[in-house]
Length: 116
Image (cartoon, rainbow, N blue to C red; front, side, top):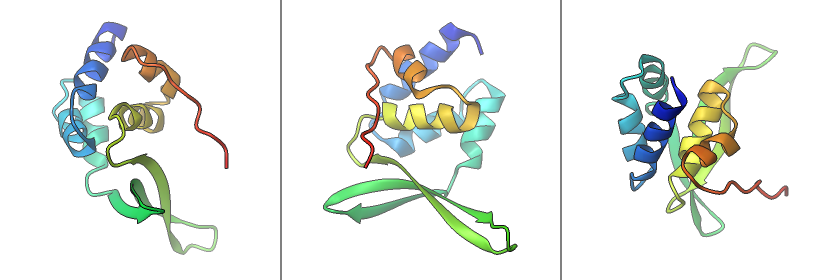
């Protein structure tokens, strides 16, 4: 994907209201790899309320060293956060594009998450 195409896609995704809308848009991408990557994520998100915030998690099953399946949960964003958080997560996880670069393509400023 050319840089201009990537920027156009990221900009279009940032206009979506929430993660489900952005994911649907990704599934219909003209770029086959992007569309397939988005399709592979279908049904892998969960919403949980933690400390009063509605958090969106990516949930997968992975086999551990003992051969047992374990649930792996990764916080993606909070409900109501700017969709760029999901978009940056998507391109980082699926295509190794640095989150900072995705934010830059959207014309937004990336801030490192605080370590806890």
